[in-house]
Amino acid sequence: MDVNGYIIRQKREKEKLNKDAFGTICSPTDLEVIEETNEGILEVILDLCTTLEIPYQQAFPESILLVEDSLLDIVRGLHLRQQYSAVLDLLDTFGKKINYQNARIVGHLMYFRAYANLFGNQDPQKAIHYFQRAYTLFRDERRYELMVLKGLATCYQANEENKRARIFFERVKHMEDEMKTQKQLGPSYYQAACFFADRGNQEKARAICDEGIETLLEVNMTDGLEELYFEKAIIQDDQREQIELLKQADYYAKLNENLSLKQMINEKLNRI
Picture 1 (cartoon, rainbow, N blue to C red):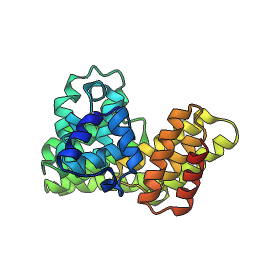
Picture 2: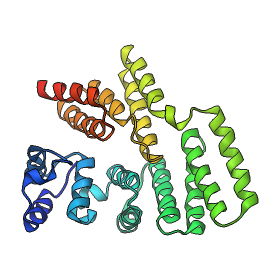
Picture 3: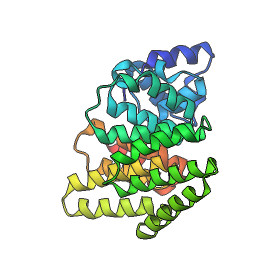
């Protein structure tokens, strides 16, 4: 993803930190690439901004923040890190300026705004408003519909509307009984992606990887992300995109202590 690498370099130098001071986030080589080429994987950029206390609207160029797809990726990453005030700040500053073409993206951003209002601002009433708007856009996607219903149930419970909360929690329970549990999310998506990839249907495999990655991030789970990014990288033809996906897989393999996969990722990166 594009980033204002010079901002990161300036802040790092101002703090008198060497490139090897960020070993828990990225290698000195990766940091140099970010600072000199203005490109890097999103996860590392967000971690650098957090460590160096760089506002996200300074770290990313407007050409990224004013595009619906990339804004969603950034907001999703901040949601995973529970940086709710940053989510609301970006949505208020840039989200309202975008001429959206994809209603599904709008639904996701509504969900994140609702979640940030509920858990960040402790404002269940405002959260209900945005969860309801997201719900109208997710009626045909049961996984996301379930997430929104959980949010609404939590809001009503926080408002002490216990009868209404109970109704929504019962709907959530019914849907969960029909679907896989959260612990099965990562493996189920990964196995499905591998199934289609092995049969030559890379487009379907890629779509399943994307859906799995989105879902895990939005329910604040990282387990299994490394496998989905790795599988998506394996079926990627574009070498530059493949390298970025492998680096994202490596990031989550390290986070989840999946050492065997991390070794496979590093071997593949070394061969490229």
